[in-house]
Image (cartoon, rainbow, N blue to C red; front, side):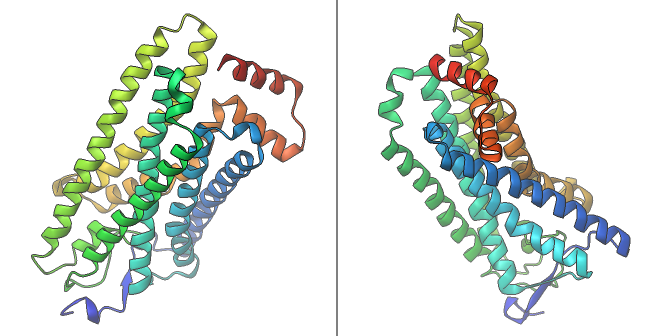
Length: 322
């Protein structure tokens, strides 16, 4: 193929050769996607309907749930379709749309995680300035900036990637369209532009990561100075879920895009891509709800229509504490 204009479709990675394994992969993807839809849907509904959850922390958590829903709906449905029908095809425009949407949602999610770290830092280290620094207008502006940055970031990468001439076939070594896999098909030195953009992106990601590490150092120093054991437990319960989500998301994403070529292999690439694109949307609701009594109470109220007395007392104590 002389260039990308002659490519009408791409061939995605076949996850299995036998019909039984294809159906097994379909069932696995179906279970993960349903778990992600249910968990994130409950968080969005609970935060939207629970007036006592209309705080900056839960506002950003709602936006995070939206980005999780978007990212898993971008990759998993096509993989399920291919596994169910035994196909590998994805159209050229469909591949471009998948790349754009995935980078948009993942980029927005990373910026939202950075903002959520700032929210935890202000609430614990500068509680007297919390209302000033994180008012409703400021929160709306920060969330809008995260989504807009993700959009521009995605537009830049997608436009640059799909402007490259492709002459090394149309088979991708991934179950969804991914920029590193598309770059392997390029036959032009122009692909160095995209590598340069990835390097710049890595610097941006690393800068945000350094900010989060610095913030958590200050947070843990402040938490350890809290005299009340209950206060320390409350602080850790709001910070540890965010730290776990950031660790899983950032480590898998950076390893996927920055690992040396000598470490690349089909099985490793597949495992890492699942870790950053499929697992977080399903696990994030569970991670956040396990240690947050207010969120668990809101979800329980949403599902049953009533709030247990024990849960009401715990939530009331937490609200008085903070």
